[in-house]
Length: 75
Image 1 (spheres, rainbow, N blue to C red):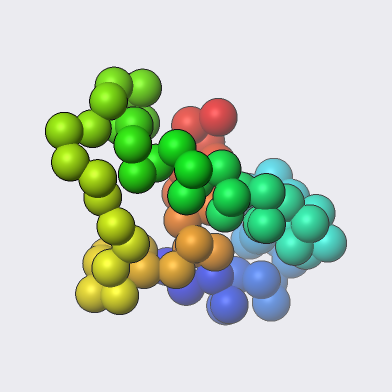
Image 2: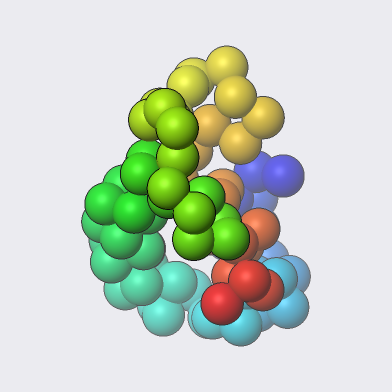
C-alpha cells in the first residue's frame, strides 16, 4: 500500500485513516515524532523491546506515511 496513491483518492484516504487530506498532512509530523520516540523502545502491546528496532528501506512498509493508515485502527 503506497500512501501517495491513497492521498489522491479522497474517499479511500478517509476510509483508511478517518482523516481528509489536510487533517492527514497536519497529523503526520506528530505521528512521526511519537512513533520514533516510542516504537524503537516498546512493542505495540507496550512491552519493552529486547533490542531497538530501526526503520529499514527494504522493509514491507518503509515510509512513515505508509504506516499511519495501517496503525490508525489500533488507536
